[in-house]
Image 1 (cartoon, rainbow over the protein chains, first blue to last red):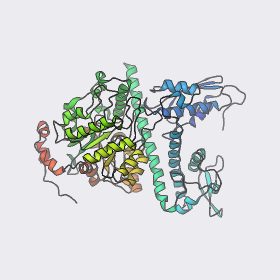
Image 2: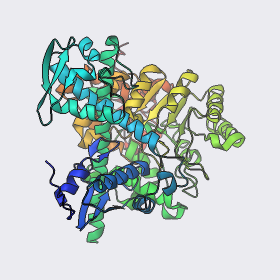
Image 3: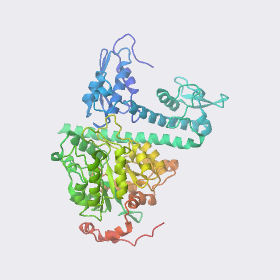
Image 4: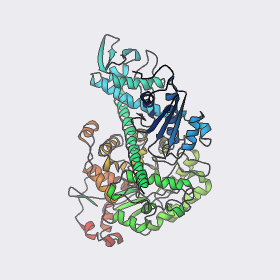
Length: 258
Length: 354
């Protein structure tokens, strides 16, 4: 699947794009490539430059920071890359962000008047992404015939995901039988649940309340609704961001015509 | 009043401003960025043929505002929600005093809200009392993300904020409208955070908390808090204009709100002049929930719900007698100005359902 060369020559554009595709807008939980925030990729030997523009100059500097740092780290994780340079444009804090990201500063160093670091904001948004992704995973199980009681009882060890396979197996009643479900929503959920360390041991409950606890069967419906709500919130904000980006592009085009 | 399927619906716009963002009034770069940001919101969710140019958007004046709101009876009444931003704008962006010039000219049409900022301490408490004495403000608009000196904002659950909320309760200023939505430069401080409304609402059950912009982009946190605190309401500004160019999204947001809050706690507002009720009211009134959302959520955007959201809910909060207003508007100054006497005299009052 990887298109990356191993002999130390320059990375390909496709490899860089693949890496950037893993970076999400933390508020929307969608790839910055899919959201069209990436304006340009310049490759010069082991040096990679990436130009980013966000929907508005007012996008939270904390979110802009996270995306810029994640983009840098993803690209620099490629063996063929010596250095990534991120250039954020059209943002009210582009100077601080570009300098901070390219000089490897912390957020607190880049923004001395901020109240601290971005870790807490990132953790909160990760949690929301996890809750929203869980909705799709649970929906897949419901559609496969699971009931609430069975779903809240599923442990990590009950889930069998195979690389590249389109379906996953979920074992119930202590491995006495397996139900086949689409793999994608479960993989996507598990990726986030693992990333934040919520689900790691084989015996861990796979699905959780937004607060991170195992789900009581009586509150299953409410927890599921909260997952749906988290999705609606993200996609609504996505609608605002899309619209603002279109409006801004329109304005820039008009002023370029003047 | 909006004519809908043969019924007349009384519309109260719960969120309007009369602002001044002319270059002469801007004293900080933030002021220019702020109005540009507002303008992006305006153009994003306004039909192309109804968009203003930036110069008229900076300052539109009282006459135009009256005509936009009431000229074709798109709205019957409106609630002023001030936004001070005095660090950005020399005379403020739209202060209570500025809004009062128009509100006191047409007291039958406008509700005039005030504000407080707990960072102003004793002086702030005195100012709140002054607003109460001078204008009898029935509510306050709060801007927790506002810059003041070195401070980049404050929280509703700060100890100082509680002092001010207590003062509101003592003075009978019952309606608290925290802005929870688009913000000014939040840095890493999450100025969108709505969680501070939770503690404030449970500590002051005698006050109503109308969370403006339904917490977007924190709709999830907002709805969850609102299910637990029955004195929390959702103001639709920002969500409403989705009806115009993102109707599926509008349907989804409205379905969530009706499912979590119920039809009694959702309140219409245009956020004029970001959006203009003269087209927005119709878009919202004619919007429909998709078949899919109606089935999924089991809620309806029907006539009864629209009447509540578009007027009755906020009328309850502000003790507005809709029937008395309708009669008064048969010959008030604004109806005379726009020839709306017949419009308001149109029909016998419809019998109340409850």
